Image (cartoon, rainbow, N blue to C red):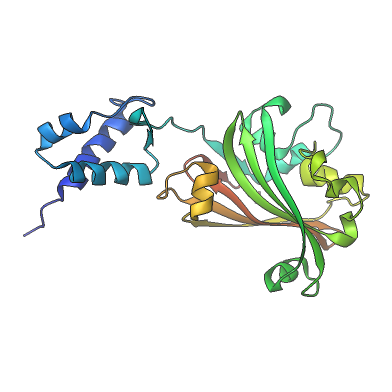
Length: 254
């Protein structure tokens, strides 16, 4: 005999159905605890369990003084390798691969940034193919599109390439052309491969807070290597993008 569905899951399932069908559109407030309790004959604890489940899935949000409402549906971003073409060539209009993917103007683009000089650990040294302890500029970014946090990145450059240059100054961010434009300004042309390795995982607590996603929403975790004449000149490890806001597009010519 099948086990009876817990009451909180039954309530969450019904509310989830209404959200996905549009009966509860983005911004709509959920029924009050009193109305839910009357409809399902359940306790306040059960109602909280149901709403916590939906909040974990990123479907609803609770604000003090405003109750719980349906979260706005994020725009879907298409991630393809050809996005880096936006960073190549002359920048007649300031842009990066991020602004192109998001379809936003430069004025709608913002970066929170934190720079630090570090010594490469075993993983980072292996990605760069340099000795452990090599001096590296670590840059941690939060990318915003029209005020919405949309991507995180830990981007690293070798000190021997950038120390003492404008690229190492956080005040120059954001930089038109992104990493490719920065390296080009130093005479380093990204003219080989750009390699990305993509994993899907659950976000850390810090990532859920910085990106404003539900704890149950998976993220793309991308490790990127940029090459110049066969040498790795930039390592991004990781780039983190919410899984409910993006699809990965791969094109293969055969």
